[in-house]
Figure 1 (spheres, rainbow, N blue to C red):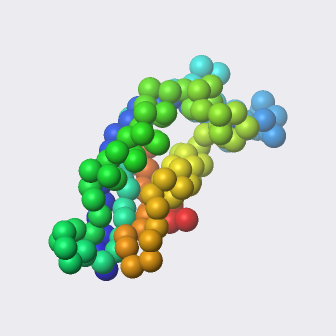
Figure 2 (cartoon, rainbow, N blue to C red; figure 1 turned 120 degrees about the vertical axis):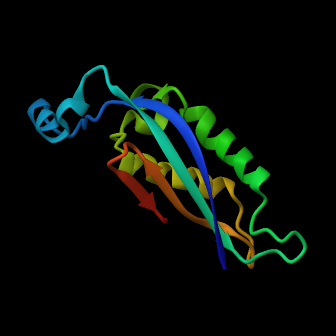
Figure 3 (cartoon, rainbow, N blue to C red; figure 1 turned 180 degrees about the horizontal axis):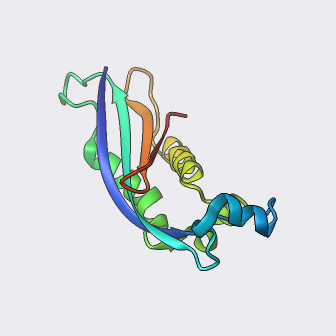
Length: 138
């Protein structure tokens, strides 16, 4: 079993605000990240697929295919988007990086077909700042 990790970058804005909390609770929990106008991040996305090395190609996964799926299903919809305003899923879900990481995993999992004995989506790692990142393995 071999892991292949590819790194991607995108920029997006969000406002951390939960409709289920009061204005005071939102301000206390999210602090400056609750700014009504939002704020932005330059995210770094690591996508890891794992599987056996294919005897014919010598590769664990077709990197060009992975790049295409990530670009079309994740980067194009999210890059330079305001997550709260431009991404339907975050209309009712607080766009924390934890939630964003899980959403990206779900999107990729649905778009990277898994065949028995072949590579599969193992993990998504999303870096929000140089101080914190999140990982999700489904």
